Length: 210
Ligand SMILES: Nc1ncnc2c1ncn2[C@@H]1O[C@H](COP(=O)(O)OP(=O)(O)OP(=O)(O)O)[C@@H](O)[C@H]1O
Ligand SMILES: [Mg+2]
Image (cartoon, rainbow, N blue to C red; front, side):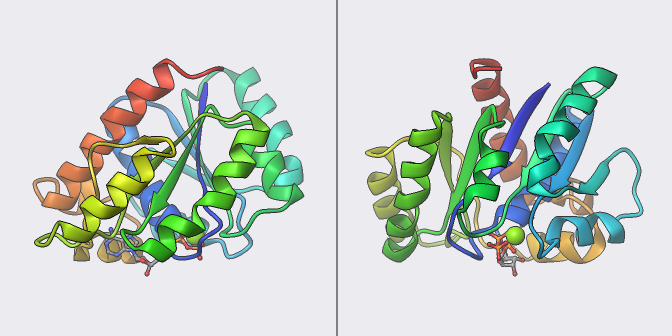
């Protein structure tokens, strides 16, 4: 059972939005997924409650109970992938979650402020010895200049997912409807981006520490 954590201390980077659509894309790819929300804001849980489609378990878990929940899930032996959403801040409680992650995915918006704001998260992940990767999210779909600047800055710090995610209305609509973008508009550009991102993450998870 692999554990993918969405994390960054920067609010609004797209952790919850990508957690939801990645959970669906992974499920459609044959994974048995449980999505866990450790953020009191409970954005992912709210998405799960709006969700009427089947096949995905979304639960709220206190950070202090996270390791125990994973142990139970591992013991039951049914789940192949846990996707966990975390708050947009760091603290001892968030560390309890991140230390269990096989891979931490850091969504970053293509702006210098967001790139710089990712640094403290990277420092914490290095202290925790966690494997991590950035994904550029909320990129301009037509103009790539800022995206390329941000990509250049991020690759000097760590792995960067080669598939970037643009600002697209499908992501907003997915959160309203409780769907993943690959369910909402399977042939849409957002769906293509999320499928590519999931395939890249899957390959990283295959090489990650258990
Ligand atoms: N690729 C995208 N295209 C369009 N809107 C997006 C995209 N990614 C995120 N958003 C929107 O940006 C806002 C912030 O996203 P989200 O809540 O997922 O971020 P977050 O990192 O989980 O924030 P927080 O740290 O507050 O939990 C939301 O309104 C969301 O719908
Ligand atoms: Mg969130």
